[in-house]
Length: 64
Image 1 (tube, helix red, strand yellow):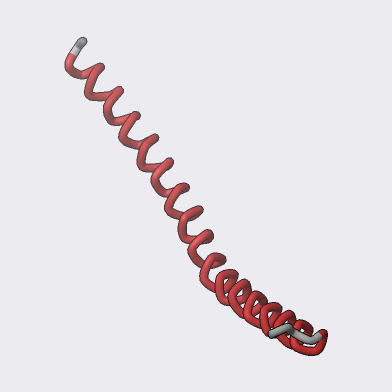
Image 2: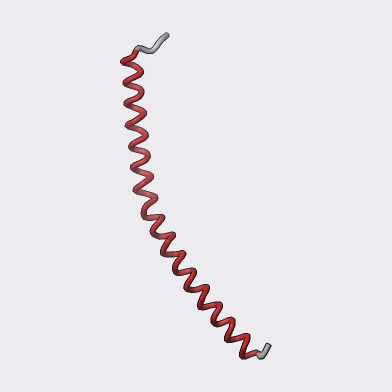
């Protein structure tokens, strides 16, 4: 069995439709996740700086 040009064109069009739908859904999912990751990263960096400052103060108070 051999595919005709019309069959190949139909298959190609269907594949393009599925690829577009998948990429669209991935983009909808990834954008909010990326924003959350960036905001969490910033919060963690701020917490890390605070912990480091507290650690320095404790070290000075202990007289080490």
